[in-house]
Structures are given as structure tokens and as C-alpha cells.
Image (tube, rainbow, N blue to C red; front, side, top):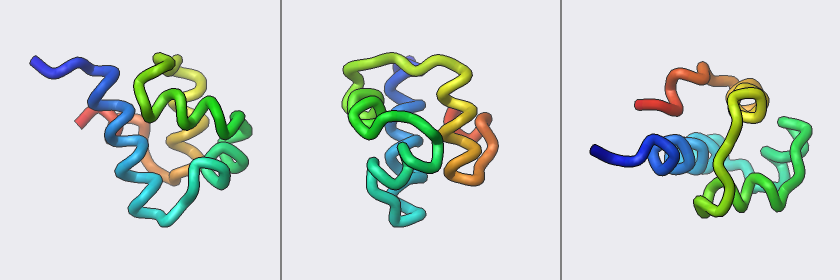
Amino acid sequence: MQDINKIVRQNIRKFRLQRDLTQEKLAYSAKLHRAYIGQVERGEKKIGLTNLQKIANALKTDIKKFLD
């Protein structure tokens, strides 16, 4: 079974790249720090539900899609 944190961070990156956003642009839209987005995508930080919802809103997607 794959680690849920890995699945979520890979999906954040996938959706970000599909929308042609930099980490900086995503962070700005989500009202988060750019370094935080990078740390999450690299697996250095685990993401909480509140920040995951902010990222989902910024990417205009449902939070559930990060779990697929």
C-alpha cells in the first residue's frame, strides 16, 4: 500500500503542472508561502486538511481528487 502523504503530494504537483502554475503562483493563490508548497511536494512537510483545502480551492479542484 502506498503512503497517503506521497499520493497527496504527487497529486498536488500533478494538478499544479497541469494548470501551468509555478509553486509561487499556487502559493499566492492559496495564501500560503512558496517554500511551504515546495516542502510539501518534496515530502519534507506533511500537509494539514486546512492547507489542503486552500490548495484545492486555488487549483479549482475537489479535495477528494488529491486522494486518487
